[in-house]
Figure 1: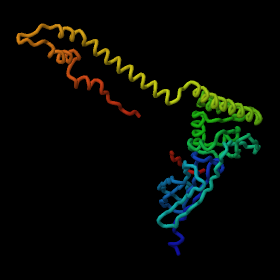
Figure 2: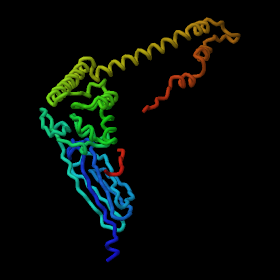
Figure 3: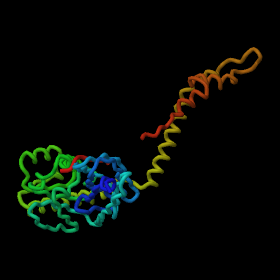
Figure 4: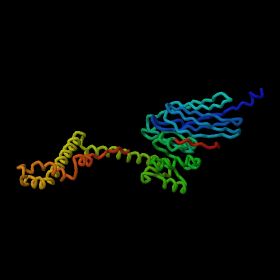
Length: 316
């Protein structure tokens, strides 16, 4: 009976980022908490679609280990933890897939808004990821000052990376020091990082940003289609250029050898009555600067082809 009571028991919890939402083909994150009643080593497996992440973790009594694992988009994620002395613990995590763009809404007030064409997901501070890769699950984000202030260091670091990569973010009534830090890291000239004094202003800024991006996306292909010829035209141009340069090379070789050829043709006959005609080819070859193989080496130029992070820490 004492041996049975002494067997280690593993506690396992798994929570997806973004309140369980992502988009097909994107990256999200699972927040995992591990604990044990006695010291033991556990093997953690996270399986999402074709991706499997495995880690060996030493657990101590009274200590919770938290890991944030970035995973590929999958409707179901299997998280399991096993130790040699106890049965495997397993948790199945369901992740919803949104076909529409996702708007993350982190408001401590709980206010709800809708943006046309977007699926809105309500968030609290712990729903935000600690891996920057997981920000690919959303397309726009609104955060108020209380939610922003509740983020831990790893969450802030991931948010800064997302801002630097031109993530579309609207901050609502953010403190001045926080604004300065985020403004300093905002990519795309700071156009994707916006500040608003009210939720209504935040929505208007977000709509204007999306509209500007939509105009740019539509305009650029139109200019490209007008300016670029089709593939057949490019092939014809390349053929003409190749023929031109080949003819120019032959002409240059001929005219550079012409004076020597004329001198050889005017050479007097030998004592045996033969002419200097037999010297034309050797003389021409010397005028080209070497043998036939030398010229081949010059023209034969070789062508050379050019060519998730796992966050972890102790729980709170």
